[in-house]
Length: 265
Image (cartoon, rainbow, N blue to C red; front, side):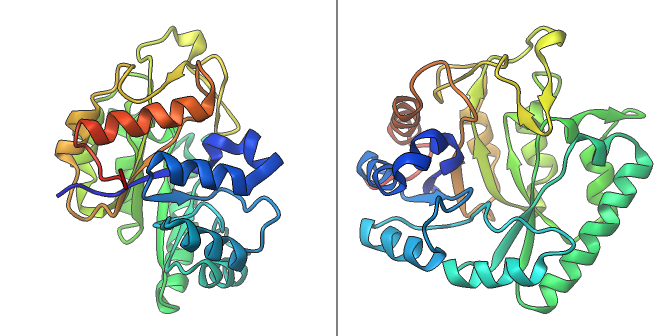
């Protein structure tokens, strides 16, 4: 069954900071089923929820709030305002740099997960590339997943390749039992090592990302391997080689015309 197609609004952040409502209207006009916010751009969470409803857009997930060990009360309040019962977390390269770091990160996540579960919320984690580096031959994320067995995953399929070092389809299968959301981006894999870097967990502009369907990602393979537990497929382009609004529109067209996700058009 096709999953609804959403878009991570971080992709359109430069326009959003100037006119967030116009961005939401454009996304609805393109045909996206939903959005995943990353900040509310001075809109009250309750106002955003109403605007989305008026535009016929769903919010399957959000990167606001972002769970941290010391903000869980605030995170739950914001989640309630936007109508969600799942809350995201995520970490930086130093939190996965070695086994001791991974253990400390897992301990923190277990504490948050247990607290949120007692209060009726699901904790899910968003990955970047560094979690899919290897430590003593094993994926760091495999080690981490064993240490915190209850956290759910939002797998970013592109990042899970670690710039072409790993297989995105196999990683979707590996973590299928706990994956509830998929982030989909496209780009050039197997880039020169000097260009393969993250800066504070954010994509370096040297990494070339492109509209979905025009890069090296096996998007069709990822969708075919995706478990039924996935609630939505979310397009995200941290940067792009063309205008971002155009890239998001082209990505929608590729995903829906190839029957890889469900849109409103």
